[in-house]
Length: 110
Image 1 (cartoon, rainbow, N blue to C red):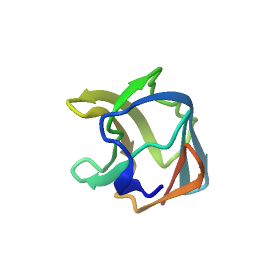
Image 2 (cartoon, rainbow, N blue to C red):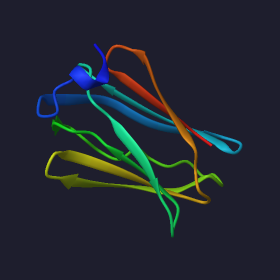
Image 3 (tube, one colour):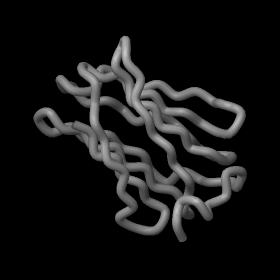
Image 4 (cartoon, one colour):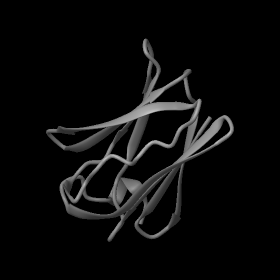
């Protein structure tokens, strides 16, 4: 199912969320019980990567942040349409969103 067809209001249950950092690259992996929509964009001053996850999420939490020089921290907030993850970055990031498996989104960050 392509992302445009995913429900923006459906309930989703988080299975796992993990942030891995290697050198100057990071990867955020979000795994849910079903497929889900995901939108990402960057903001500057200070540099941030924002990830919106529309829908009603159960068990949503921010991932732990390992010691690194790429991601300063991760915050989570609730918007009208669902949770928003904000990654505070050391510098303006570029990113690529992948869907390697059903119910999984991976965001590669540089």
